[in-house]
Image 1 (cartoon, helix red, strand yellow):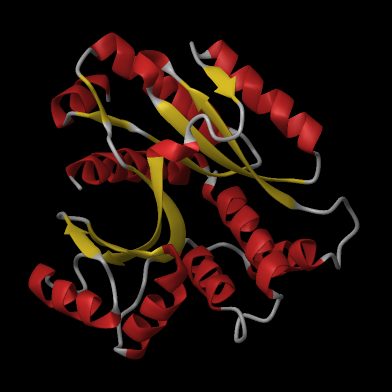
Image 2: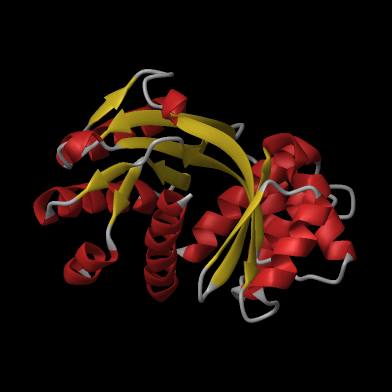
Length: 249
């Protein structure tokens, strides 16, 4: 699972950049709207929505923004129906990408995502061209300052998790995709505060990128896809060493 550790570091760096740029609220709004659409607007009856709201509040997202996102998801606000769509494509060096988007205009989003690929030395593929390179998992993240590595490993496995990956910043708990809510609820009932819970796509065989020029192109494409207004999440099959990441940053 070392590739997932590298990928998580890339996402962690990007999340910090987004926070500085004030882009996190739009990400939370998309997630809240989709979870409200799928499971209803009552967080007491919708664990995924409750987690999305808690994550948004932890980043000081205003209450009005949260309520507006819920109403957008449940259809209480005017506008088109929100759909969750996954686009697939390739970047430099054969790196595969999955892009999850929440949109009320599929044609616009498809054109915009295709343009992002084309402008960054990539190309958008058809459904299935990239998704087979990933395993669908549940992902729970807990701040590493809250609990030690050995203790969270024991608690997570007892709760039904498949694996735990830890670094200095956070513990990443992986579950079967259909066991995510069950494991998350068990951990909460055990007194743990979750940083996030979501479905994640883990590359089955990560592509190791060893050239700075290729790494730079891949990360530019990742930034372009992740910065798109309707994007919820971006997943990639690539792995970049710490040394190259540090040199590019």
